[in-house]
Length: 130
Image (cartoon, rainbow, N blue to C red; front, top):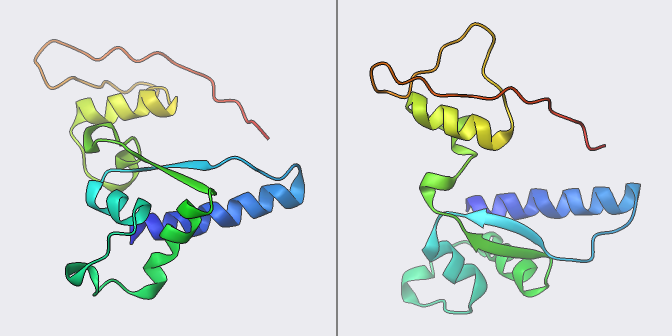
């Protein structure tokens, strides 16, 4: 269900970018941490145990088959978006902050969870790509 909602937003953003500038012709990558959802979206392997899935969630199959979205598996530990949706330990927050290009807050101290071993976080400047 989450991949379908993400695909709907992705298609809308593709149309918006196409209206503002050059249309996107390549498939847009969507990362997913659910291997079963990936298999259902990429292959036509529906059976009795998947018949409860509502028709509106088959939309992801259509956009993958149409070449607009490319689904790629990303392990749960590597999901950077988790920093926005879950309570995480400090070391994981530091890891995902670096992956997003965010620096450490001024005056803040982030520990790695081990006594006496601070996490080194480099300050980076975010640049707008618009």
